[in-house]
Structure formats: structure tokens, C-alpha cells
Image 1 (tube, rainbow over the protein chains, first blue to last red):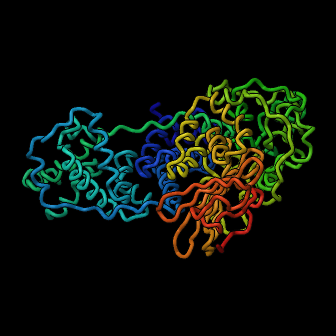
Image 2: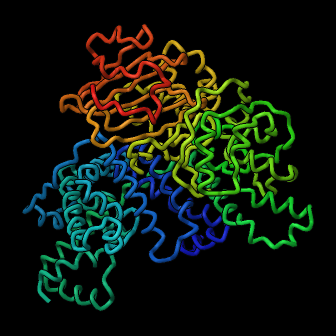
Image 3: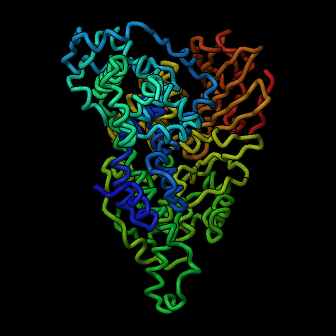
Length: 200
Length: 431
């Protein structure tokens, strides 16, 4: 199972369906999570997730290892979601640009967690809400970085935005999340894990 | 380097995207810069907090479909017959085996929701023993969608001559009858024995349960739409519609490739989910959603009960939807205010069950969903302007606006008959 995505893709290209199965098992849930949190709609996320992997199947024949498999897959997932969103005549209004509260940021690191939300069942909705409250551009970057594990340069390609813009969005996203979580009583360390363990 | 430059690199540092030397430089700066330390700590803390958010597991149902598509694609790659050495064909037994391997059925197309998924996915999912190809005809019937498929299939695979299937249902072997996809035609040209030698066992009990449901009795096809070309799709294009009741997807209008989002939506439940989003948006899909998630048996019952639901077109749609038996296709009409977008959902026999239209009426966006009974008459309509509430009206008098009573503008109660609600019907630009 440690075989790289790219090797698996080449094996699938050569007709090994089991390689594709490994890829699906490895990436379907992260891609679905990404789409679900990007669109906020489970049904659409399921559709888009399936479409994404069917595109993998369809594109596998001509696939060449120009970029990481994950970058390719998330680019397809993201573009499908964006295209579909554009097609929706009655799509929801996007949230306005992130409100970036300033000033209060400094205190947080020194403060102990004001309200340690030990119960993850209670914590989770707050995290979901904080994520959902981000403007789409920031949420997208955050998810691609945290969920998909794409590098900023890859995210820039996926979202067709300059890398600096991507990083700005990421900073805004992190700021926005922090403030939303703080407002919801989720302070630093509320997740119960040391900060450095969070990288995924 | 300035403080600002270091500060901008904190994000890269936090995400491990700095090279070793650069990282060391930033870390050295951190030692003397409380502001940057605080910033880095904030980044890490936020990440730590958000890391508690687990991944959402993808629904299991989709996996088998993907693997089936992958199998089909893998077979397709081996297909080009001219590459096969001639000597292989010298031995008839070998030829049979090779034929079975390279037989690229377009069954993958049957992954779309509907009877293909039900009937043919046994093969797709590699579940079944190879069916006797010579079983008597049980269910084969001319398919409304068949003509449309001919073109599409030709575009991809000249070897596929679909006409045989569409034109000669009585010829279909048992397996072919269960699979109105091009595989039927393919099989006919090949020795029947030892089809698909490498099929794996069943993977998904739920699908099997559906597949094992008794075939429907033969019945005349719905009025078939005229043949038309479809976008060429490689054999792996599992999302392309296929088989019975298929809605022709190419409208004489600009149909954005994207507009096929639902049309090309992944098969089976995926399609139903997509549709359900619309239903749920109106807040009236509770029963549908419940059905959708019901056990396979329930879903089958829902499907079979469909024919009894003539009086309630909305229920009919919900039932078909829940059973994953609807096929949807969309078209968009740029520059057509009265109908900028359309989606047509049809039952397995190609009869339009629901027709959704979006446009603008005097500048106000509206959406109307028209539900047709099994008699093909307009029976219910749901109408909404902008983000306003949706009004659902039943139309006791088929096709008439009686009962609409102002809740729905009469002008949008069009067409009164399902057959005029085809995807390629002229856009209704005026109200």
C-alpha cells in the first residue's frame, strides 16, 4: 500500500485494475470530504466525487506523470465543483469577503485555552461551522492544503491563481478560522493535540 | 532579509515547504523575533484545532461502480484488434477467448441509473457466472435510446454496430437481453461461449439484490427520439448515458459541456443524489430521501410500485428517483430568457417524468418543475421565483392549468404532455 500514487496510476494504465482500487481506497474519502466541505452539499459532493474518479478512469489512458496524482485529481474535483456551481442558476450567494479582525490576534498564544472543548462531538460542529464560514476562495485553499496535502505551488496551479495569492488566502483562512473558533469558545489547543502534531 | 520577508515565510515553514537552509534562516530569525514566534504559534494552533475535524467517509456505494468502470477501461485498452497477431485467430478456441477479452461492451454505459444499472451491472461488477448467451429472449425490446447510441458508439468504436441491437430485439440472446447496451451487438458477432473469462465475484450485495430482481415484461417502447450524434466518448466513459430510455443528450442548442453535469453524473445512486439536491432544496423530498436510503428491497418495491402511481406524478418521480431509475439530461439555452436551462428526467422507457426549466420572467429568475403522470400528462407543477418559496400545485385536469389558481403562472405550465418535454424540444424563450 505504500506504493506511490503515480506508480499505481501507471500500473492501472497498463491494465491493473487493482492498482486503481488502491487509489480509490486511498483517495476517495479525502476527495469526498474536500468536495463536501467545498460545496456544503452531500448529494452534490457524492456526484462530483464519482465524476472525479470516473474522470480518472477516463483520463488514465493518456495520463503522464507531469504532476502529482493528487494535484491532478483535486484539480479535476475542484474544477467539476466550480463548473457545476457556475451552472447553478439559483446558487447561493457566496459569503462576503472574509472579515479579518485584527488586533486581538496577539493575545491568543499566551492565553490558556479559555474553554477546552474536550468533547469532540461538541467540537466538531464548531469546526465545521468555522470552515463553512470562510469565503469560498479561502476555504478551497485551506482544504486543498490541509485535506488534500497539496503544496502551495500545486494549489496555485489547481486554482489558477498566483502562488502569492494562494498563500494570502491561506493566511486569511487561518486567521478567519482562528477568530471564528475563538468566538465559539474553541481556543488554542482545544483539539487536544499539540500544535506541531497537526500537520497532516 | 527583512522581518517582513521572514514573516511571509512563516506559512511555508509551518507547512514544511521551506528548504532546509531557508528553514534554518527563518528559525534563526524566530529566536530573536517575538512577533514572528507568535505568528507561527497562531498558525500551528489553528491547524491543530482544525486537525480535529475528521474526514467524511465517502459513501460505499460508489466504489463498486468506479471499479467496474476501471475494469471496463482496462479491458478497453486491450481492445485494438488489429494489433493482435493473426496466428491467434488460427485457433478458433483461442479466438473465442481473445474475443471475449477484447469484447468491449459498452456496458459501462449502463452504470447510469436505471435498468441498465440493474440489469447489466451484474456483468459490470463482475458478479455473475457468465450467462448463457443463448438463453431465450425474455425482455429485449426496442429501446428508445438506442438510436441515439448508435452515433455515439460509432464515434468511439467503429467496430460497434449498434443497429443490430436496436433493430432486432428478437435476436438478442439472454445475456444480451439483460444488457441492452452495445454488448449485445458485440456478443452477437462473436462466439457465444466463455464470455468474459476473468470476471471476479460479486462485490456489492446491494447491487446484486437489485440485479436479481425479475426482469420487466416486454412492452412497447416509448416514442423514440430521433437519432442524433452524441459526443464521442471513450469506452471508459461510464458517465455517459446509455441504454433504454436514454434521453438524447445533444440538443440543437448550445449545450454546455458542463450542462451534462447531471447528464454525465455518475451512475446509480450518484445520479439520484444529484437530483435529490433539487428536491430537497424545495423541502419536499423527505420521502424521496428516505426511499433513496432505503434497503434494496424497498427500493425495488418503490420501482415496481411506480406504475401504480399514475395519480401522483410527484410521487412517481420520487419513487423512480429513489429507485435510481431516472435518467437526467440538461441543456442550456443562452440568450433565451424564458428558458435558459432545462433538465429532463425520464424513466427507463424514455418517458419524461419531470421537466425542470429555469428562466426569467420580467427579470425575475424562476424555476418550474413539471411532473408528468404515467399517462404522459402534466399532473403537477412546482414553481418558485428567485429564492422565494416553492409552490406545488396538482393539476387534476391533465395538462390544464385548473387548480393552479395563481400559485403558478399558467405560462410555465408548458408543455402539457410529456412527449413535448424532450430535451431537444425547442426552447421556450417566451412566457
